[in-house]
View (cartoon, rainbow, N blue to C red):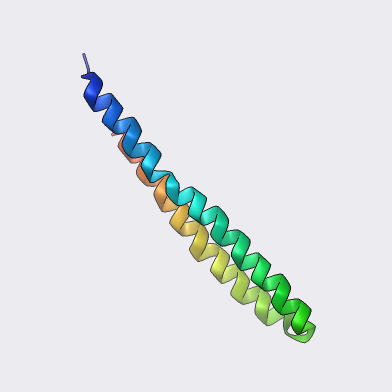
Length: 77
């Protein structure tokens, strides 16, 4: 039988690891909000700014996925 303290520690660690998802969501909002402001200021740079925004989105989302992966590793291993 699994000790209750180990289960509580696993759930607590997994819940702390999911805090990265909150940061990723805020980061994605900031990236695309900045994209809209930049396009509003200079619409002629739309394609170049969009490339940078997609790069920022991918890097920000990678941090969230790493946090989710760590939460699953804590729970299931």
